[in-house]
Length: 445
Ligand SMILES: CC(=O)N[C@H]1[C@@H](OP(=O)(O)OP(=O)(O)OC[C@H]2O[C@@H](n3ccc(=O)[nH]c3=O)[C@H](O)[C@@H]2O)O[C@H](CO)[C@@H](O)[C@@H]1O
Ligand SMILES: C=C(OP(=O)(O)O)C(=O)O
Image: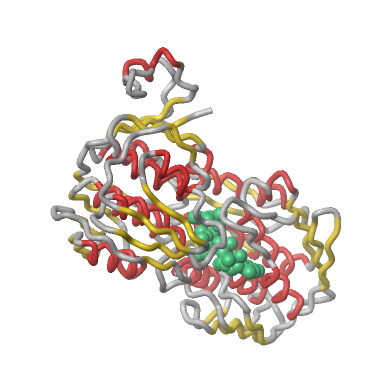
């Protein structure tokens, strides 16, 4: 069992480089299953646990993958299975993204139901509605979804009741090999969807309108492997922007694309943070007291739910009371109790959380309830008095490449330990000495 240990009080300064986007590389790797000939070469594939999981799913289906640094080569010419088992689905819901490509390519798919997770129930009805509209027969049994088609999927008009990112991606991938044209209405507009569409088009697909609410996909007979570079991770970038602002820092987030971070930048500016984007990244300077602001999460281009907990961490460092409203997931305030363990004062009322800023925060033993909650707890730890231990690191490893190393390079006092620190390592105030922690194996994975 590992933990991150953070000692608060260091101002962050310097440059941090953003990795490829988790939420772009996962659908892109799933889409590689559509390539009947040739190999795909994907650059800037971040070395994350989620990427390892989708790798295992693709291998199980018959694709072969090889890595050189952060470039992955995928050969999906021969597929040997159409089944994604529970053991892999339970690790990561995004494995469900293989359903569209499998159905389109092989005519059948058997996928374990992904189930709920810490942030909400996360149904998949819109994915299934899309596949059914395109002619798939869908059955449920023993925790699996089975889908099959006779011949090819048929292009049609599909209106999504919810602008779901995953459903948009799954249906878009399935429609690339359908007979005729699919028009997807109320489609999600996230940058990761545009990145997926760009990759599909390099593979020979005909996708138009990605990034708007209406996507048109003209089906083609075959797709082939293609070369593509994944966009930078806007949530990872936003997390470092928050960490910089919380600590009164001056940090250049290299690779961050300002266009993808509009609402995060606006809210930080409203708070009094100086944000200076240029063509290669974004500089964040926090040299004034922070002001409270209200934040409401919405589908893109609204404020991202994946930045909600980090933003809440930042609001703890602001003077005054802020209200954070979560509209995308019904249960994404699990981090609040953990923040309150660190002397925060946050009250949740339904979908809103009232955050009292400006209080002295103190280090504590806390647990990441999901990957963003974990990153947010680390951000609080950066300014809390004393030492914070963040458990649940497997969540954080799903979405952040070398988080402790990147923050350390900016001057943060953070490291990782692989064993439970013993009571002999704790000071009276609960803090842990680095010399004690170094007795347990440190991970510089
Ligand atoms: C791998 C990936 O890209 N994950 C992102 C993706 O997740 P994911 O694609 O799972 O999120 P969705 O956009 O599908 O979910 C948004 C909302 O729609 C609901 N819904 C979704 C599908 C469906 O069939 N029916 C339904 O009701 C969900 O319960 C949720 O309330 O978008 C989320 C919303 O920006 C992000 O938090 C996740 O980081
Ligand atoms: C919720 C997230 O991811 P996933 O959809 O993979 O659970 C996230 O990236 O914050």
